Amino acid sequence: MENSAAPGQRSTARRSFLKGGVFASGALVTSGLFGGAASAFARPADEDDRGDNEFTDGDAAILRFLAAAELIEADLWTQYAELGGNTNGSPNPYQKALQNLDGDGSQYITSNTLDEVSHAAFLNAYLESQGAEPVDLEGFRNLQGSRATGAKNIGRLTNLMNLNVDTSWYIRYRSTTNPDFGATFPQAITISNRTAIPRTDADMGNANHIQVIANTAAFHFGTIEQGGSSLYASLSRKVTSEQVLEITLGIGGDEVAHFLEWVDFAGNGVQPPVAPVSFQGLTFPDFTKKGPLFQPNLIFPVPSEFIHPKLPHCAVIRPLTDKFAGARATVAFLTNMNLFAGQSKQFFAELHRLADAADAAHRQG
Ligand SMILES: [Fe+2]
Ligand SMILES: [Fe+2]
Image (tube, rainbow, N blue to C red; front, side, top):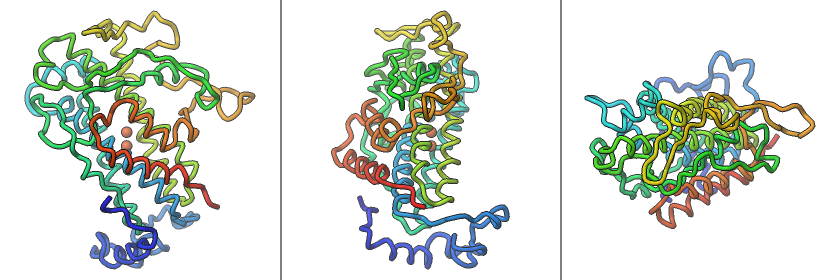
């Protein structure tokens, strides 16, 4: 990767950034960026609570993996937003099908996309502000996206047209068991090798077809955002700098906010009036009569095992362990959903390199 500096280059990069970087010419700079009470980014509320702000190599590795994850999220959400988000003019059938799940669905998709773009840009800018190299995946933007009207003809990092959508989170968050204690969960609906966006305008011609595509997207939204919620919570445990912890908890909280909306949204796809709906072998049934593990309006995490089986059940984000929620687990999760179908060996090698470094980070104190 063009931005992967060797460890020995780090101090040089930091100096050059402080000297001539993006913030250095601004009137805000007084004495260093983060180093003391007069730091350009210090806030009044922090003055009595500066804490330990040592930025470690582990912190950099964690933020780099998160930056890569956010660039991937931004890429996939942008594809959703171009076709299903807020647009000018009359809505296309995909937007209408998404709005059948929630009248505000297109706005939520546009908002979620803006959030991901902001997460990626912030993390890379913060890395640079600390003299650490940012993450650049532009060279991997080679995949063909949708050819439907509204989709931009630009290279993509991700492929939304052959997805295996893991829907086990739907059951997991309605159960009282926890994957970190060995629990496993069935798929709520088996969605394999399906598109979550109209590939061409022809995919928008049949009402059942486009609703099934929109419902596939709805579950995929939840799948992505529950993964992000667990990833941030998992990596936060290994952060050393208080400021980096502020960043991972702050952005992680926004991932949870996204997830909650998509839990409700997907639930609207498995109850009347939308469900049942089928097209070419994929059915979204009516879940309202199937018991609490399927109950669509159970949108908050049901209390489950947490920390130790003898402790009382607690409503939490889960999983949180490295094995199921760490960086490598996240790469496996995204790869298994076929999100990177068509990507190069070099792309996977870069993701694995970033994930290995993030998972190797340890909290120092
Ligand atoms: Fe994000
Ligand atoms: Fe997200």
